[in-house]
Length: 378
Image (cartoon, rainbow, N blue to C red; front, side, top):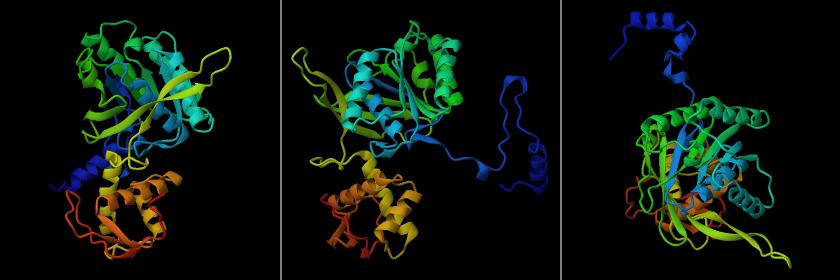
């Protein structure tokens, strides 16, 4: 349908007026769609700024380990499950077990050469059904943002941040999620809320207002004694069904002395093809492999790229992240494509596409080309 010229002119004359906040409502004209800003990701393809994600699981499955790992990745500018994250400050609300949560962060610090990431842990009684308590979190995050913007806020757990209200009551839980959305929007951060399942089941407990109000739902399940799987089961703005696997392992944080036993805690390790001994790639690596094959077709009919040009193009198309991690992601992705039989090389400089069955990955026109030296056995 073509919009008549006179209608276009009328719309432009009206939208020249500034957006308003009449009657307490925020009103914004759509305007030119090409000028709309791109979505700001906290975890690319998973959680955006201004969104609320609920991670739910049975007790003792690993919710806090997952949340602390995500927080640490954001604070250090790394990645989580192969997904680039925004480098930013983190406000972690450890309202359930603050001492244990701090021990897990301390373990991650020691694993990463005693780094001091911009993570603040808050605790104490709070009721997010109360607008004043929500404002405390907003004010704290904004004060922290004077040094480095806060882009992730964690609420651990929903029950402990609800002031003892009935989780089965839709009204109070709806009010709480109104405040969580307010926190996300006013701070400009992603909010992760940890929530419990009904004991022994995969369904989250409480009112249906919880899943209805969240932007992203992630379930966390135990697959074996040490392996867990996180899966996006519902979302407003991203593909559902994405899954991520990790292991739990015990680490020592304080050695044994003559007067005291050693202290230990549990942290998580992502499972993916970048870990030696893991034959199965994470879903993020599989997705990236498919995107990389299609990149060859889009950018170069001859399929010839130097490694530096390929890395630059992959970064431009947000297939891999910036910095050293992007180079490592490319290496892992090419290694996975070789493992699948989609790419092969005659020696370390020459890559070519295998012409056999391609499963559900589109066939690329890639021919022999120089991808530069790369040791896939590193």
